[in-house]
Length: 163
Image (cartoon, rainbow, N blue to C red):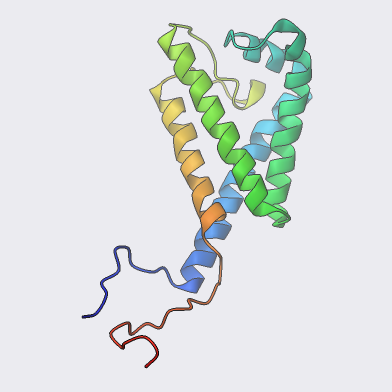
């Protein structure tokens, strides 16, 4: 009896396009988020402080270090150097940011997300949480799909193994 795939296989060109598209989209977001924060770390430190999660002595180092990490992730995703590692770091960051937003909403804290520094104001809302979760999902193809990899299984799986 032929095996019926649970999920249709994506051809190699499709995998390559999906991984590249995900990498470039994530890189654009992370680089676009890093640049304005690096330009005004004091304002970004205030944005972080509004979440009421980080002790005051860590605000300055985090306001500088986080955008540097975002920029590093963006560059790695564009160049492809350690792209899977960058996607993993991006995934953890995006899920952490979403968690911070959820706790702020749950505690009734009304604040700007600070996602893009002073370049783009966006109030924390269900939409910003969903946006971060969607971006986190965009990390998955980079982590789990091998672009252009040749499928080791034959297309006709009705033949018995070894035939």
